[in-house]
Amino acid sequence: MNKLTALFAVAALTATAGIAQARDLGPDEALKLRDAGTIQSFEKLNEAALAAHPGGKLGDTELEEEYGRYLYQVEIHDAQNQKWDVELDATNGTVLKNHQDD
Image (cartoon, rainbow, N blue to C red):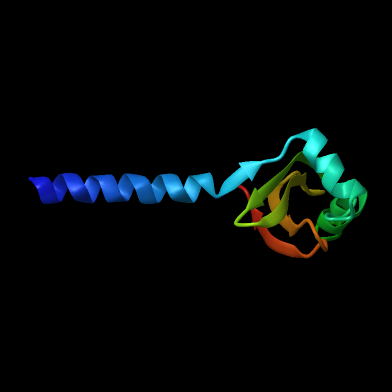
């Protein structure tokens, strides 16, 4: 019984540690990072995301720090109104993920 309890405790701690590594950044912190040159301007990041879906429209955006890396996540509705989730490296605008949202 003690082994089972220990196993659940380790699983819970592992899951919590993974969640704790990503944090959403608020507008004030995001602007400070942009002004310091740590991340690209939001205009450039949005352009990079839209370049993957010409004619698309921006939806929700989010900036987060995950494992010391700044990620910019953008929701795009393409010309056919399909929803896409695009994730970029906020420091250089490189597209890291680009997948259709179901």
